[in-house]
Length: 165
Length: 420
Image (cartoon, rainbow over all chains, first blue to last red; front, top):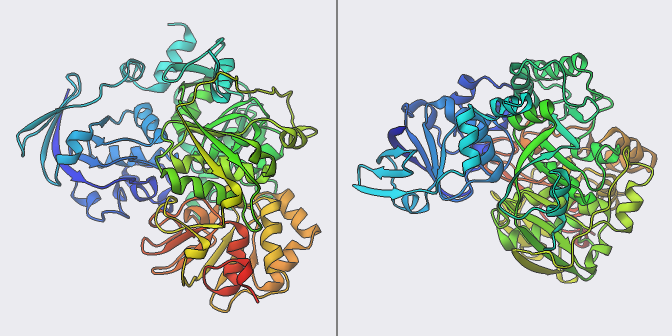
């Protein structure tokens, strides 16, 4: 599967409080959460992000709270994936559990600039920066995580396992 | 091969003789918890499975503490969803306002988490229970839904960072200062994906309250969990309180650690974390002149009776500065009562501070103490991210309760020794 879109670039330690501020956590409606996605770090993101776009960031993306509202808001905003140097661990598992693709690609992150056109091939594990004409490999997803994705998410995986399928 | 504390608890819960870092395991959960922010998504996910029952109605805890007492209609609807789910599925440990407390103080105090446990919670500060020599970690709502269904969680066995503590902390230095110092040293991703295991004879000088504070903030260093060895203090806390039989786990002599750092507790002074990351720490003596508008004492990090005693000892007989609002949040009803019995509540109220019912409220910018644009707070909570306590252009400084109380009197960040 290929994902295509332009890059929205942010720095290190983007926390879940800026991805979706707590003042909006009194709802779990994806469309409403998406309207406030990244609001406290970039007030333009929610209104200008186009379907397929990527969030590109530095180290420790998604640090802070366990709120699944963060990957939900990003997914519902239309963004296709997050590419970062590294991810905070709860955000990492939340993203897989609910089907938001995320990739650790440190080399690519350093050279991507805001607005660059990117294409990601998830099977091949490659990222192409079409604006700069450069291609990168990213760390493949562990087999267990691929199983989760193949099963349709954690709930389907665990439900099948319980039934002894 | 020898195992660390974390590896041993994970192996026991995965039905294995041994586990090694990097392995993915399915482990049995002793307790799974959620709050009013994270449970609604978990409940919807659980219901989508069409399961007739939860895996064990005595091993799920639902605590409406974030926006409770309900701050608005939407929050009231979220708590109502929890309450109805708890009733329908017979969840034993649902805590209503009036009996409720901040989850990470309430559950160990009630003896619902015990040494040797494996606990997951849809709240990042679930790592708090590592103080009891338990493995506990924060997960998302979907993980909570899965655990409520199957009683299991998938986990990657983390590498362990060993932190050796020596010496006795000086006056006014508390557990909060130790963990802020460590985060300042290793950074907010300094223990990313790792377990933080404490060791050394310095631990004997740390009260259980301080250990809870330190395990609580393991997540602020990116860690999966923070864990203390079981000792006499753990035993004294657990005996007579634990609602289940507990297991004493010890690290093997030949356990492998990915890294090791040392902290001389006697060399520390109180620490303040500047905006907008907990790693932006300075010793109190180097803070300079930082005027403040608000002081918060409370939260899952520092809302225990020992924390209120520490703040009350500083504020007693003094007045909150004219330009400052001081807000006190005992973490549970039991702590509230104890603070009343000991006269702490009177000391705070007489000084001109507000004394609240338990809630996470201001810590996450939920309610009960939101900051306006340009305002500045010193708080005993755990995060000082952009907009954490309100307006994106407000600021939060993190400290221990004694420094927070002294700052309330001074009207600027300062320590108890600066008070007249």
